[in-house]
Length: 203
Image 1 (cartoon, one colour):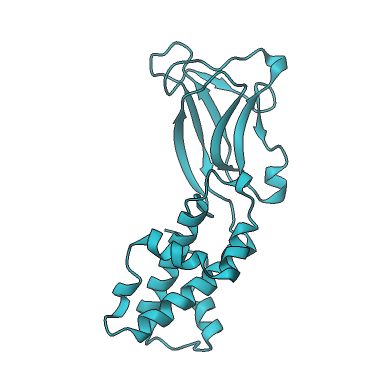
Image 2 (cartoon, rainbow, N blue to C red; image 1 turned 120 degrees about the horizontal axis):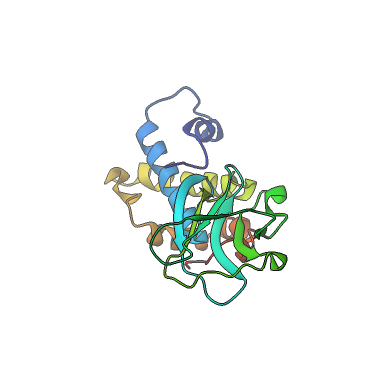
């Protein structure tokens, strides 16, 4: 999976450029820090092309966290409930992506809103809306990069100091996320990314 800093960046921070003795620990610490950030903010800060299915309610808007503009967005609907998405809707004609300025500010869209003039209604079948596009953030904001540097350095320090090696970084992401939350610098950086831009805060 995508990480938010590279081993080279971390080595530059640690002033050990060109050294290789800690490569495994550095890579593991960066991976752990990146996944902790994802867990803490309830999203991911890199794009991944996916096909997702949604069931609509009665509202004009459908929540679709987190869709970005790095690829074309396709919205297809199953009008008769037969499992075939035979009708393609067009952005700007049939629907809008909200917030409308998201792609200009580097943030993801989090809703599809029907265009009233088109007279469209969401089909009420289960999983009747298919959205094909790139989900997650197109690029990680600066706060994420800096938070990853801080967390990765903390994890690396703990790893190099323990007699048990890299196992302290481990796979318990939520436990590590709780450690990250008590770091005021990390919390400040990540909490500047508005909760309205992501589905939930896990912690």
